[in-house]
Image (cartoon, rainbow, N blue to C red; front, side, top):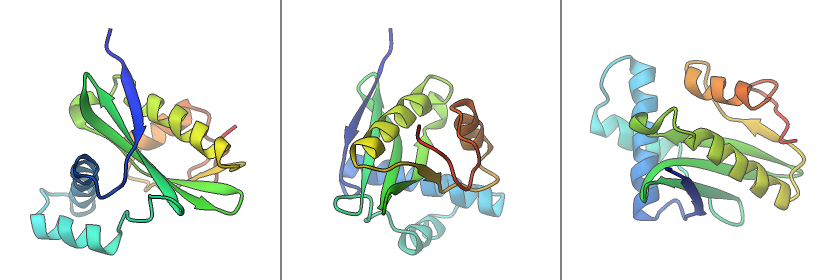
Amino acid sequence: MTTWTVCLTPPDAPDAAILLREYMAEMVRRWYGRPERPEEVTAALAEMPSDDLAPPTGVLLLACRDGQFAACAGLRWRPHWAELTRVYVRPAQRGTGGGATLLAAVEAYARAAGADRIRLDTRADLVEARALYARHSYQDAGQCSAD
């Protein structure tokens, strides 16, 4: 049986940087509707950095499947709530439980930090992510409960 494991990782760690770049490459592809150019991904990473996904402003979780990093999710801390961002599962691993595993871990971290709700940072064109959130009883893409 294949299992997913989750760990906290600084966003500048090599494995985290690779997954965050893959995430941003997918965002660029969807934005432009064509294959991304490396310089576009680099510019997007600079414009929307993930360095705040580390204590004390947030956390970044990486998920492994079969010993290989395959997914990530970040939380940004806000007073009494958290913002969920950078949720990404490598395409080959989608549909294998990685998203659900990450959501469960994110919710546990948010509760432990005292957050009473999670708000999603997602785009309308991220249909896979929005479907994942809906399956896990998130009410709306703008404001969602972690309960």
